[in-house]
Image (cartoon, rainbow, N blue to C red; front, side):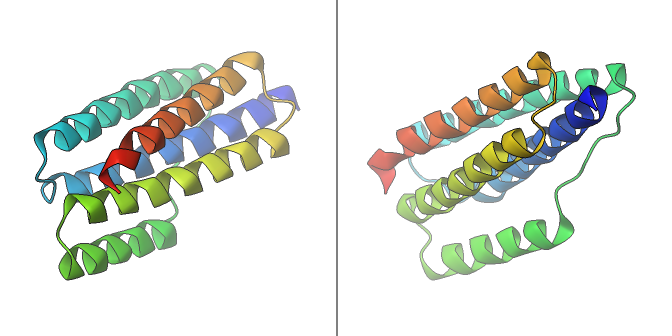
Length: 144
């Protein structure tokens, strides 16, 4: 059970880091403020770095990567393009990413509760991903 829950939690974290990187990529070209662009780029790097660590853990547990749900990815792309199309501003970018952070945090806590038998390493990774999301959400408040 521990290995199963560990792999499931790592896979969900993997999907989350990929979704975050994609979402940031989708808005970076629409960001005007240099500080906001830097903030988003740094967060993207944190997500990628943690994603690489997750991949290593998945390999060590003979688990496979997990891509984000195609429906969720498509809906995110659609929402981003509609919102940016109506208002191309740093406020719109911050609003979109803040919504993404909120959804990510909620999902990660759900998976932590669902996969309670996951090992401490995977739970630590999940907590670090939550922390990255919470920090980004907090740092975006000035742009809303």
